[in-house]
Image (cartoon, rainbow, N blue to C red):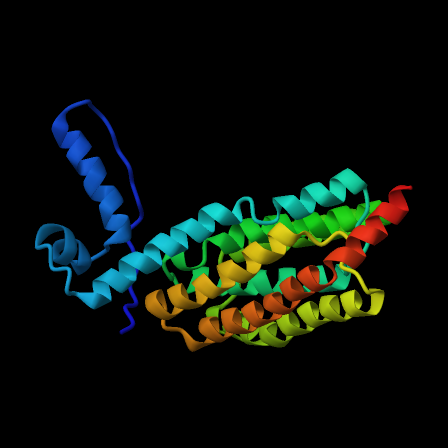
Length: 263
């Protein structure tokens, strides 16, 4: 059972300290997880046999959890790059292709007015991925590329936020992002295989991306029902599982490489 809906924006207002204000606040929070008729079904009538609403509530919890986690999911990777002042083992092309895919998915979902809980992490992952790309270029001495990349990507985001790009174009971009995402991930997989180690790739980041992708498949099926979005997350999750597996497989080889460089 797929429930597609547009959740009302979560507006939290607390004007006074009386019980009515507190009750309104609690109701607004609950409606974020039980939107529409599900609030009456589950909270008011206590109809816990409504599987559709329970699935939607679970999807909302997972979705908001993913969004909160996305604010930190790539931080271990960023910290690792900054601490070592190196982007060794990280393919800039792969990172940029991943960024293109993320941007297309977020822009398309935003234009389609899908619930924020079904795609909101894309905003934070975009910023973190863009920062990773800029850091890798910087530590490779490509300062001019950093400036050009930052300026052009900022302009692109501004255009998308102002909705000057038609929805059909965004749909096409989302469709084209599928091979881009796969190619970008496979380039990183090939780079790891060719080097025999995973360089500065973070185990925590790789694991979180894989697990988050699995959860996002469920939330996309439940909240949007859009085959294009579902297929996108399925392919991205499969690719992320390969990279996560490589980080585990090459763990010893990567540690030996790092120890050798620090001597």
